[in-house]
Length: 60
Figure 1: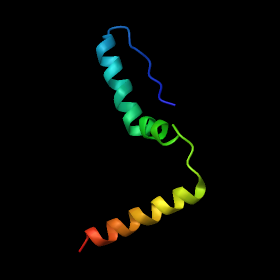
Figure 2: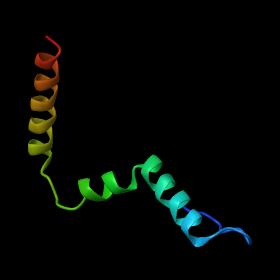
Figure 3: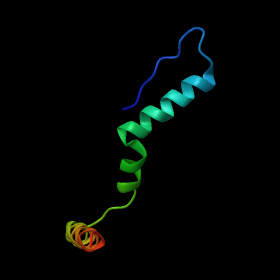
């Protein structure tokens, strides 16, 4: 979980910017989007296979 402490002389805008950057580095938004809807394991495997195939052919 992303957590920051606001310094005494630090503006709220700077603290918010640091928090957003920390969330982006931790991958919080991506994780939320991934868990937004349940995906069956079979569908997850199929998507993973299709993505690997697409990446393999895009190299050539």
